[in-house]
Structures are given as structure tokens and as C-alpha cells.
Amino acid sequence: SKDTKSSINELYLGGCGIGCRRGTQHLKEVLELLSNDLKTLDLRYNDLEGKDLVDLEPALSFASNLKILHLEGNYSKCEGAAAIGKVLSATKSNLKELYLGDNQIGSVGAKSLAAGLRNNTTLDKLYLEGNSIG
Image (cartoon, rainbow, N blue to C red; front, side, top):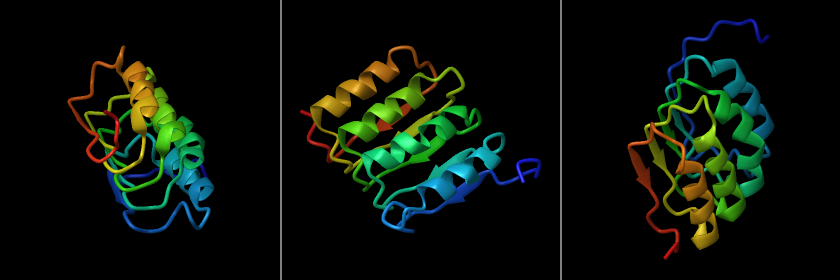
């Protein structure tokens, strides 16, 4: 139920295969429940593709207390980078650290991230290693 009070501040789901098991919709529902309290979300190595991040973008954009987001080692590519760019530009976004290493975002995806960063004043750390953006 959406009336349930959450007190989970950190959620570590690295390596759970959420993308390949089509668990994105369930994850979205969990994120909506935790949106007021969640500060750290670890989704690295989950086989998440761009379309998965597009589906998760509204919930991530609304998570106003989310400070640290790990997405390393997924397959977000350009489409996922554009979704994360929207998260970064969301008025509720308070992300301080974003880990996007090894996501195959390329130069087009990097431009989408840059667009999202134009008005973002909260991000302190952005990790993009292994993305062939240059």
C-alpha cells in the first residue's frame, strides 16, 4: 500500500539481474514507496538497458532525498543517459554522487547528461569511466 511508512535510507541491489528479469516495474513501485526516505540506491550490474532507465526516470526524479545513485556496469547507452539527464535536471533532484561507469553511453549520451547538468546545482561527483565518450 502506498500509505505504508518507509524508513529505508539505503537500498543495495547490485547484481540482482533486475533488467533481464523484467523487474523494472516492480522496482519502480518500490522506489515510489521509498521516495521520501531513500538516500542511497545501488543498481550496478543489473542488466538495465536504456528503456529500463526511461521507465525508472519518473520515480528517480521524484526521489528528492536521493543523494547517491550507482548505475555502473549496465547497458543504458544513449537512451538511458537521456533519462538520467532528465533526473539531473528535475527540480526535486538532490543527487550528490552519480556513478555511470561502463554503460556504453557514448558521445551522444554524454551530451544528454551535459544538458541535464546545465541547471543542476547539487551534483558533486560524476563518474563516467569506460563509456567511450571522447
